[in-house]
Each structure stands twice: as structure tokens, then as C-alpha cells.
Figure 1 (cartoon, rainbow, N blue to C red):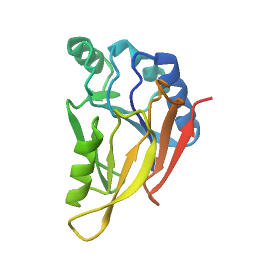
Figure 2 (cartoon, one colour):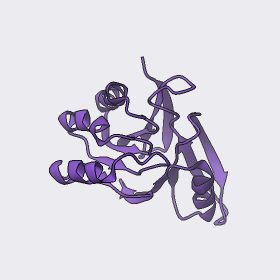
Figure 3 (cartoon, rainbow, N blue to C red):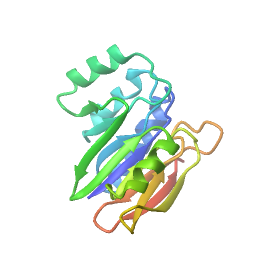
Length: 169
């Protein structure tokens, strides 16, 4: 299973939709948004793409009532998880949060295969040594909104644990 990981869209709905559309063409079956959506309407164009979207709020929450209403009316396509996400997808345990320091801490536990974070607007993929004696993938897709850096997103292949940072064209 492939997934699209995005973060920090900051009200840039066309850029977010373009990244998710490209991910869908590349075989993605779900989307994780690591926060700073800002306005709920930023997510509305994703409904037409038909992929399940899992969202955390980040430090720029926007309007939580509007976000809740959008999720309720999405027919289950968009799920707002609050501050963090703990998911099992394709046999992989994933955690997502907005903040890199929180993500690194959770990666160190060894409880997750992949921890996704955002906030820094710097795309990165690293293996974090963990307390279980192995490593956990710690991934940050950068800012799909292109704030302070090129607009980037991440395509993750959960079957083989491969991660590709892609730049939005």
C-alpha cells in the first residue's frame, strides 16, 4: 500500500489538491496530513479525489467547528484525529503529529514502524534508533504549501518501507 504524506498546506487548497492528485496517480490509497491545514475548505477539493484523508491540527488550528462539519459531511473520507494519529495501515503501525520533537520522541519508543511529522517545512526521511533496539522511520514531507521552501510532499510505500520526497511542479 502506498500513502501520500503532506503537511503545512496553510490554506493553499490548489497545491494540496495537486499533490494528492499526483500521489493518487502514483498509486496512493490514503493521505496523512500532518497539520496546519488552517481553513477546513482547504480540504474540500480532496473529496473529489476519493482517497481517505487523516488529519491532525498542528499549531495553526483554524476553525475546528468547520473542520468537524466537513469531516461529518465527507461520508467518512476525511477524518480529523485532533493532535495526533495512531493508525494501522497495511500491517504497519503509523503515528502522525505536527511537531518534529514530539515525532522524534515517539519514534524512539519503538512502538511504531513510521512516525510522520511536519511544522519545520523541511522535508526529511531518517531512521531513528529506538529503545527496542531497532529503528523507526521518521518522515517529514515539508510544506505542501511551499512556505519558505519548495512545495513538497512524500510518497510512502508501506510494503517495502520506501519513501520518496516529491516536489510539487
